[in-house]
Length: 72
Image (cartoon, rainbow, N blue to C red; front, side, top):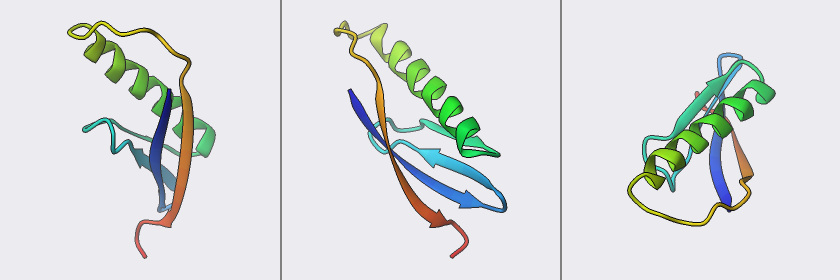
């Protein structure tokens, strides 16, 4: 499974949202922290969704899109 995240930097930290998963977002002070938080958020979102929809498990691969400073 490939998921695209929109990643932005703002005031020395990062935040991201996942357009395909409404309400799924994460933040972090470093990119590593952001990716850890984002992976956890995506897994929680998909696990919560899987309660009502049975589907096969596939490995999660993230595709990041760094858009730049959110203040510009």
